Length: 225
Image 1 (tube, rainbow, N blue to C red):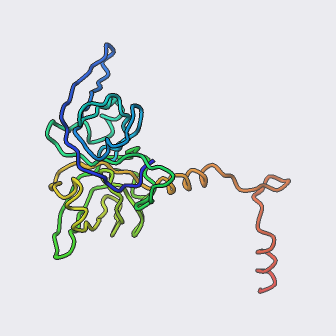
Image 2 (cartoon, helix red, strand yellow):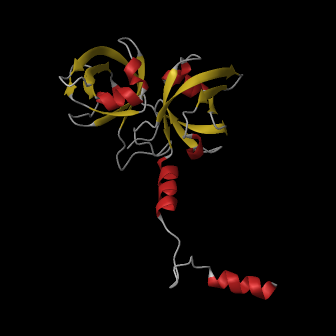
Image 3 (cartoon, one colour):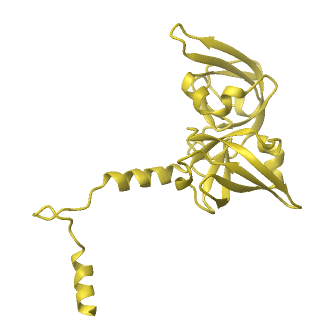
């Protein structure tokens, strides 16, 4: 579990492709970092551009993670190269301030930077939304873009906009993303849970099998009429 508050910018130090006999692709990703290695142990989780990865090995100022086919297929990590900068965040602890929102590190889709509009105090960035994700996004709600917790300014069926303050521009990869670049998107998990509950919860039925009405509301309606 993460909060979407990036702790540092790491650097991709190595990328080793690993192919299995059945044709599945994987890779071992080596990342140079400092802050996130302070108290990390093997098996811990670190979010890389919003993707939850497991620490496989630790070196002198580096750590590695194995990235499986599923992650490569569903996230922008498939396109990283040595030298690329990446957003890093350690998993939260019970004492961590929840400065952003609840982020799982499970990417829902990959969007594309559509436009950047600078202003004196912030920069408005438009990002495309993959089909099916817009229903989970609301104005003034939260979304994780490359692992950064952001507030939605506007949302359409196929895109959203966010405002990036100077701190976000300076401390995350979003400051250097250009139009056409791909970014990982994770919508608010609470929205997905609510949708699932509404889909799977049937209306109460009466003895005849019909949907039950709210008796109190019915009586009130009849009395008013």
